[in-house]
Image 1 (cartoon, rainbow, N blue to C red):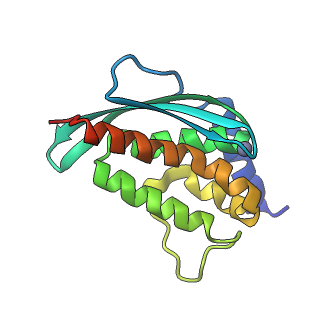
Image 2 (cartoon, rainbow, N blue to C red):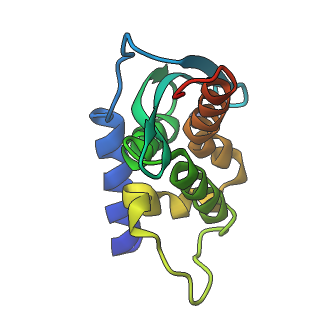
Image 3 (cartoon, rainbow, N blue to C red):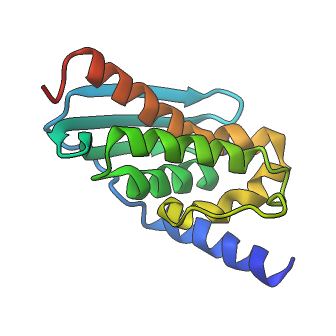
Length: 157
Ligand code: ZN
């Protein structure tokens, strides 16, 4: 295992051990529950949206879950990445993370890493393993779903 891969592994383990924004908060506009049946990962996620200067903002995102360390660490990183950001930006980051998961273990030449993705870079190695990509995407899918539901309900008017 190369030095970078070891570092990435450590980042994932650290997030799995001490996940950010874990623990469901009382105030929320929408709650979703997503499952990755192939691995048994589960994430319950709540969001609260508020109007901001640059459009609707994810004021609060909290989650709870169980499953493999990749799924739990990825949910933790996602929560850090999108909390406090505009919905528009959160959707961009989600799309960028999906691209990262399509990298098959190596970032394309000339790839410019978006600093707002934070620790998400650590998951590029996961993209080598098709079976684990769903684990890494679980939290992001839940976030997108929760934001869509909260928006549909007229959250953040
Ligand atoms: Zn998993």
